[in-house]
Image (tube, rainbow, N blue to C red; front, side):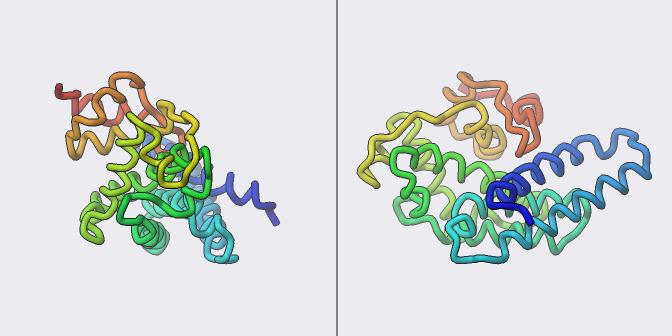
Length: 229
C-alpha cells in the first residue's frame, strides 16, 4: 500500500501518462504495445479513483488534490475510452466548483497561509483542463452553477497583479509562486475566451507548459490562437 506521498504522486503522474498518450496515440504505435500501455493507465486510474473515494475526511480528498485526481482519472478515461472514469472526473469538477465562495476563494486553499495565492493558481489548473475536456464532450462546464468557475478565475487574475487580492482574505502576506507551469491554464482559457487580462502573462512566460496537462500548452493552442492586443 502506498503512503500518502505515493498516493499524491500517483494521481499527478497518471495525468502525465494519459495526456502524453493522447498526443501520440495516432502516431503509428505498435498495436500490442498500445493495448498494454492503455491497460496499465486504466489500472492506474482505477487505483487513483479508489484513493480519492476513500478516507473522505482527509483534506486531500476535498482540496486541490481531489481536483488533480479528477483530471488524472478523467484524462485516463478519455484515452482508454472509459466513460465511468471520465464521468468520475467531471463529478470532481462539479464538487470543486461548489466549493468556490462568492468572492472566488477556495476555503481549504486559503488555509495555506502565505502560500494561498500559489495554491489557488495550482487548484485552477486541473479545473480548467476538466472544463475543456467536458466542453469537448458536449457538457456545459464553464456555465455550471451560474458560471461560478469564473469567480475563481477572476480572483486568480487579480492576484497576478496584486497578491493581496488573496492575502487580504486570509490575513497573510503572500509568496510569489507563479511560473510558466502554474500559469499554463491560460493557453486553453485564452484560446476559448480571448480574455485580454492574461495577455501580458502569456507574453512573459511563453512557451507555457506542464507535463500534467499535456506538456507544451503553447504548442497545442498558440498556433491557432495568436495573442490579440
